[in-house]
Image 1: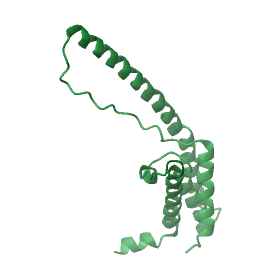
Image 2: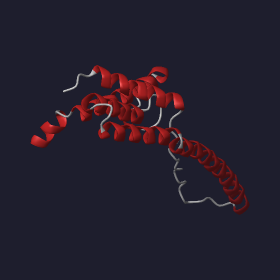
Image 3: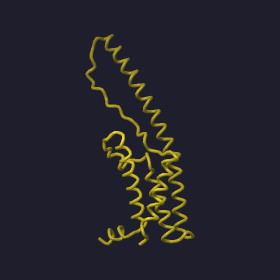
Length: 167
């Protein structure tokens, strides 16, 4: 019980969680508006507008500045980690998402070619395949962020950290 109380009484953890939750809620809302369908994956999934990772790390960095000062090693560490996380979101994870799109398209093309070959082979042998068709697996494409998504997440995190009183 003391552990739970110490978590809920921790300003940095609270603003980090609040910033992450706010970004995920906004993502879910933005996905709902055009389709009028709730996508619960957006509530926990990565990628999209705004970046919840950027929101979390920026709120933690600003919270550290407010709690320990701009010259503290804790603030310096939080800023460095925020930079790494945001760079990764725009660079490595975004590139992986773009590659996933290409690979998924190639997989669809290959399935179409194999289906045509199977139909031709069945026509030649006049037999039917009793093996059920496999469900295709796709790679997750929505994992990275554009610079605008990272910026919006960062601004959201900074605002939340400035609005929530330090305790």
